[in-house]
Length: 150
Image (cartoon, rainbow, N blue to C red; front, side, top):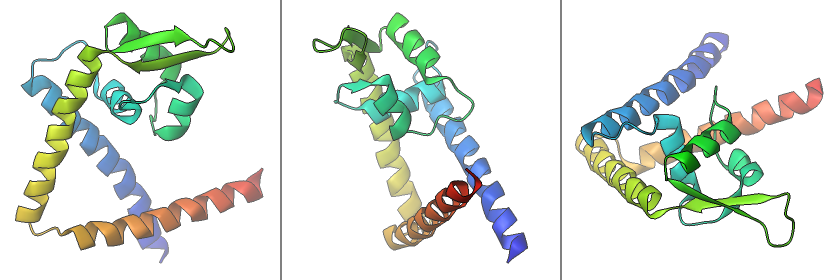
């Protein structure tokens, strides 16, 4: 069990890195050079909503990145629009610009292509559902572990 547990944790990390490579390859395919793969995932997680940076941080998993820095770069490069809250001037909210919306359409098309290719490779929706069920249980397990440490 211990060996399988270690293998699973390593696979999760490798799969995340490999997925980031796939997103980077898609950016390269479209000759998009003013945004990186992690920033692209941030945009995708915002979607058509308006969020605070705190809400955005809770929504995604951006290992090794500073969400505030990335939001600043995304605003500078025209992918995000940042606005002060009308109710609390200290709080800012972000939403995708037209440029950001166009990019997430390309990434959504990547997801759709990948889903079709998964089916062709013999990976069914039920297979992914089973994997996701186990991964969610593992996430809950680790969350409980953290509560004992604190």
